[in-house]
Structure formats: structure tokens, C-alpha cells
Length: 126
Image (tube, rainbow, N blue to C red):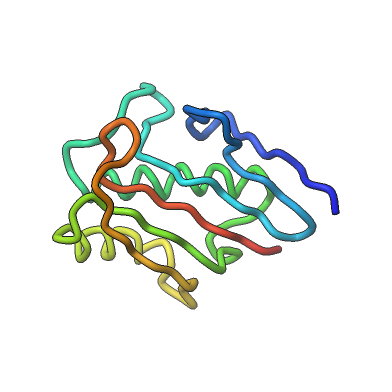
């Protein structure tokens, strides 16, 4: 099976040796996104709600690059540095999945790239 590397100029460029997303068949695998504001190139890291929204907007830009949206997402993985932020992240994240939310897990980690407090990856199917 062939794979296509997906890149959206409306989402942050990878900060390491990985692709924003890879599509194989009708499945899109989106790499973990952190709250980098594409307009400024800077991290949004002073408010966990704003961070989560920025992450979700970065994911949306990648989904749109393949003519998908959040209705196509079947699985998400959320990584947070403080499980105490769970309810705030959950509220911001949930606004993108008000109907038929995908499967997911939320995991507390000791650190994330560039000092982010939240990172989210997902799988979408068209």
C-alpha cells in the first residue's frame, strides 16, 4: 500500500524528523500537534484553554489539507503535563466533537516538546 506525506502551510512545520501527517488508503494519521501559532511561530503556553484550542486548530488545518474535518476523526491521543488540567482540556477539546466524539485516551507525561502543556495526535478516515 502506498503512503502520501501530508503538509499544510496553515499548520506548524514539523520540529523533527516526522511528517505533519501521513495518508495511506482512506486513513490519515496526524502527528502530535503542540500549540504553536502559525501566524507568529511562537508557542501559546500561558493558558491551557488557549493551548488546547491552538492545538485543535492546527489539527483542523491538517485535516482540511486532505478535505477532511473533525467528523472524520476516529481516534485521538491527548498528552498533558498536568492531569489537573484534564477538565479544562476536555472542555476545549469537546467543542470540536459535539456529536459522535472519537475514541481517545488522555495520558499525563513529564514533559512535552518546546515546553508545551498539551499535545494531541489523531487518526481520521474518509
